[in-house]
Length: 223
Image 1 (cartoon, rainbow, N blue to C red):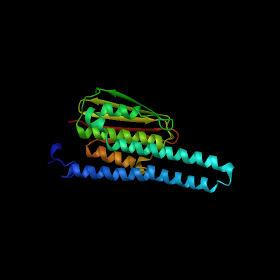
Image 2: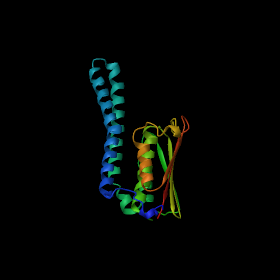
Image 3: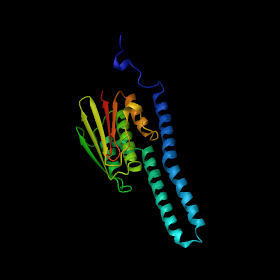
């Protein structure tokens, strides 16, 4: 006999502790894949600039490039710091948190907009659903900016009876998406999204192609 949905374990018994550990691992991966590599590249650029001090024609270009890399690293670190403490999410719900994510100053020309249906600012969903929706949107927006070089990102959240659907669409460079060969090798972002969704009994769809942007859709059941 198939067990009832509420009898099926969706996470280990030490769920909160395991979730915290998963979040630490995610942060370590993000720090490694983002700011750490960017800072290393910036330091290399500064070293080149210092070694070129006797060649004045090259010095300015090297320093400008290094400054741009350092600025990108600073933006990444600030985004990670905000991700560690989603206070608006805890205090005022996912709609306010998503709008705050969109209201951050545009990074490298990427503008983010948010649309919602069936839920008002301040209205609450179950905490684990809100956290998953926010983290998936945060990751998808970060991917669109850092990997897709997108100009615009549209985040849409629709809440209907028994289901919440998050859709993130960008106009970036896209990537070769072949579902039959599994998840693409783009770090831990996409597999991490899928894991979050599947732990809550939902589904995740990704559509992308070179030059055609990326579409990420997460469907989560509501109790």
